[in-house]
Length: 502
Image 1 (cartoon, one colour):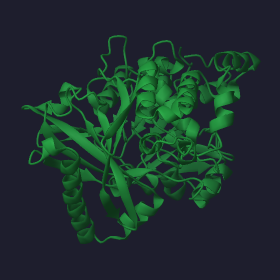
Image 2 (cartoon, one colour):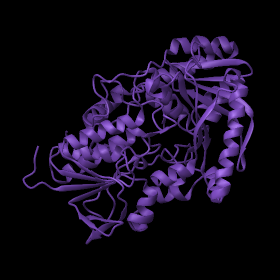
Image 3 (cartoon, one colour):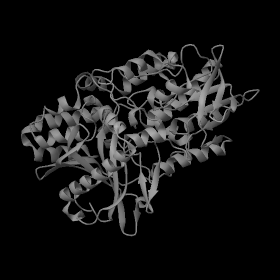
Image 4 (spheres, one colour):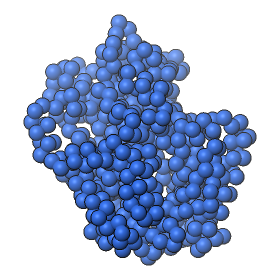
């Protein structure tokens, strides 16, 4: 599909949204150039090496691995996945432990139900309702066919048929937090299980949908790590004729007479464009590249009301340990444990997880595998990290690594003396590397008091500019990022009265 004169689409940011926009732009017959401030593609969908070990930063599960979904079509067209992609053999979402007891959310819902009832017979009725609600939540598939403003009556009827029972789940679990929901269970272990994986202030339905995605085979992990997936997307983009410029920062987006005419690089060079697609975090977009007056009202509200629109990050540590750790234990790869209280800034944490990465050969070397832990951080924690001097920051990180190591060894005595420290990173790492707002690796959390952000990608008062990226639709994540890149191109095609089906 070609236009008479090839028009140029300039994309800011070489993460998953930018790469997707680039691939779809080329498929639609445009020229496409991506400008990325870092040296590699992927944005937050990356990993790095320490002491010869690979550390993964992103994929805990990838929504859209089921071949009959719209999201799979996007992943396939961008080169992220193929029909030959191999996936990690993981059969559980995660395991929670408390007071010597364990409970696991298996991908097999029947197995989960039996195990949870055995753990807490007095919660049998609530457990059965939980499993039933997760089963119904499998109907909630990410719509990646086209932007919702382009939906017709048929699309809504189709969605209504496919998600016939899901409105019941939304009605019951859409206005309560995970923490509030957890109180329905009498067992303390099951209360912990409900609150462990996803921040407890999220809406309860977001937890049910996440688990349903895993249980439905629509949230598998492609072998080869996050960075490898981003590199496959970059390869696809280049094969189609796209150009990507690394280590290139943008100073501003040029607007003349309500039209985006191109971008000015930090070097001062002007790059002209027929269309501009910023895919970066919306905070630096409106703080630096565009005047704040263009920021949509829903974003202004979200940045203003931090309590209702929290951002999520983490203090994370990676180690190398014996490759046989966690083998044949009857647990999931991710295990939450009760710990001696750990203070970070003004907040104290009583639980943490350890995730074993031995399921993928890329994380195994010389008889050892990578394990990682993450202590969830919020806006408040970000301000704490930000308040530290360079020297204090270094010291706090070192002290916390020592404290985390102590707690891992206490929870897993078999690891005593076997923890080889690889790396530690904080919310400020994400801020530095990705200009991420408050170091968040997702978009705004969906809470009962905050309205879900759904930007249409078009800014009032600017033609030829279409915003993409995970911040356009809370709570963000990889499927939102990729779909938004595709949607940006479809919006351009619609403006040109062309076929949007690619």
